[in-house]
Image (cartoon, rainbow, N blue to C red):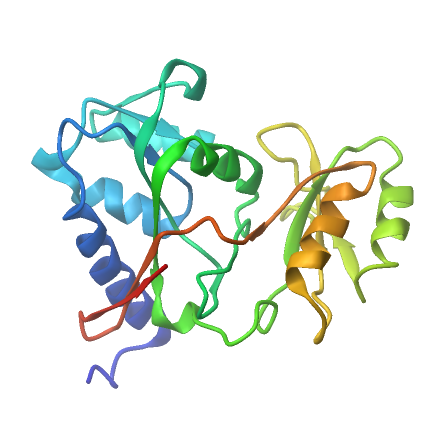
Amino acid sequence: MQSGLDPQDRQARAREAAARAAVERVTPDLALGLGSGRAVWKVIELLGARAPRRAVAASSLTEERLRAAGIEPLALDDAGRIDLVIDGADEVDPALGLIKGGGGAHLREKLLVRAADRFVVVAETEKKVSRLGETRGVPVEIVRFGWTRTRDRLLELVPRAELRRSGDGEPFVTDNGNWILDCEIPPAGDIGALAAAIKAEVGVVEHGLFLGLADEALLGTPDGDVERIAA
């Protein structure tokens, strides 16, 4: 066991193990979609000769990584049906429920997943939880107009809803020009019902609860092993 590694090195090794396992599922003729975040960027780095000529990206940052790797970013509207989406997660529960959106790209990531035949998650084993919300809140993308009213309505559903801010203290702005409220998940209750209630609120664009969407999770360990969870 790599007990002498610092936490960042342990995470990096676990992330690479999961990314390598995901790359094995990619062929050059695959219609591929890629989410956002460090696990996805490691997948892009490792694709090498397996890389398709084009791929759909869920964020502007992923588009930059694709171009640097010699892969042409393709618009979702021009892609047709996508064979496989590979994306990370902030939390993974035993039923493959996910919290996503730590990087603020969950709206585009969910659109990408809904256009795909198969969705594979790459993450570290430390992202496993017994119940979603154990280690972080759920990001909720909202329109700017009347955002405090939207927050107040969400506070009838969740214990806390805080506006996400960038390093300069200004509100974080998504690729879609919206803002994000990071919402605490109640410790009890039906998360599926909560997801539906959040989505139904006026002013909410999309939330980061991905329920019933993932087909497989590849969770890497610092030792280079990979734990697989299948739907």
